[in-house]
Image (tube, rainbow, N blue to C red; front, side, top):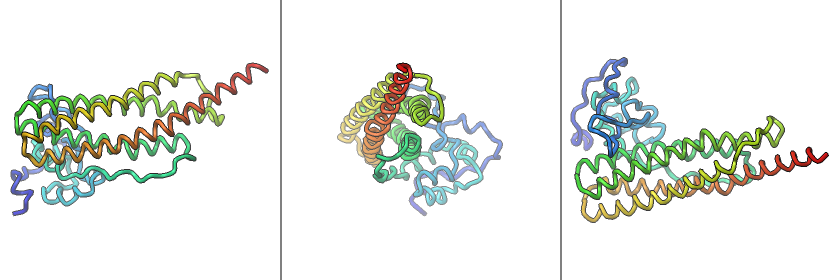
Length: 278
């Protein structure tokens, strides 16, 4: 018997593709302050997750899906009415993404920088937040100790805050930065929107992320002194990788993207002043 099948129950019969009740069952990530029936699910590690998307994000999961019997025709929720056990296995087996290669972005346009930040950092980060949440939830439920309960609560607060930060950047800050470069090049008009407050909000989000990660590392260190579980190492490796990526992600924004946007705004304002003085 292979090691995965020894850890898991037999795969339940596949459900019809139109079956939707599984999405309401316990396969998602359970929030620390949620009632037993409340779940928060993602598009990757959740009942809506599909094999192709999992393997695209984490190539090593291809063999794991094969061993589990999870094929391409169904979502996880359609394949198993209660896929929580499979989600734990998949989340454990997935490895944090490798650090992004370093490039010289000094000549990049703002749209090129934004596209790279989203594809190289934001998307993998959202996946990792889902994945680590599943492992941390499982740890806290399995051991029922105070330090792991605290870790779980703090992690979900961190995850929610970081997700809000990513949403704000993608919905507000990044489009504004692109619009500034477009206006500077004359491809569109500039409406004089407030850039400063968005930049300040983004900077505050970066500091919150660093503070939250430090607190999580401290709690995990305390947990490792009293809890012997391989999932502790899975979480530690994931948090360290998260910290490395956030440092690169933050540097691209604070050292490249934000200065480029500020420069564009200054040039536009100077142009407007010259026009007004004629």
